[in-house]
Image (cartoon, rainbow over the protein chains, first blue to last red):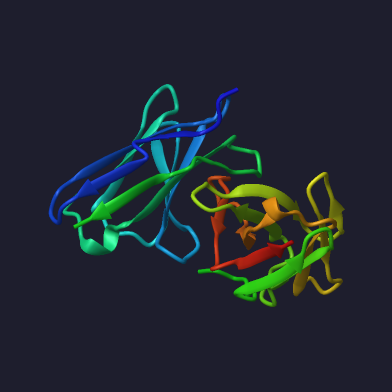
Length: 112
Length: 114
């Protein structure tokens, strides 16, 4: 049973560019959440998707957007990249009514 | 947004019990306490959670004080592989849409030494 998979594992972009990160949830899970983790900090909640709609959002600007597909996979898009967007981006999946989040290993984004 | 306070780091000898404290003095009556850990370069891993009663599973025990203002995660026999950052999280109650949301703090870096 595959867990949560994220791609790519590492990514280097320059300021002003746009980036798309991808996530496949654990088999049987229908909810995907995205987190940003800066170096030395805990993960910060970005948003959560269920039934292809954004259901909850943390304190992140509109440059951060997402999408969920009918097969429950998800994408995180970040426009107009800033140096401060450099971080580990984590995807977590869960069942809508289940308490546990299962995390992927993340995508390390570096903005130069 | 984090509702918990944890020491930034702790040391523990291999084979001994590791006791990781967490303060959540503003917790509400229906908010759960969760513990996750993050080993370097991996995503956080679920350990245990509880509401009022003490909980135990194959990984750890969770002791919650009677007033629910603090808790302790206990790893009964720490190994070198338990070296990680441990996060104590208060899960915000589900809103009208019935979805969970977790707020992470900075966690405790547990160093298990031989």
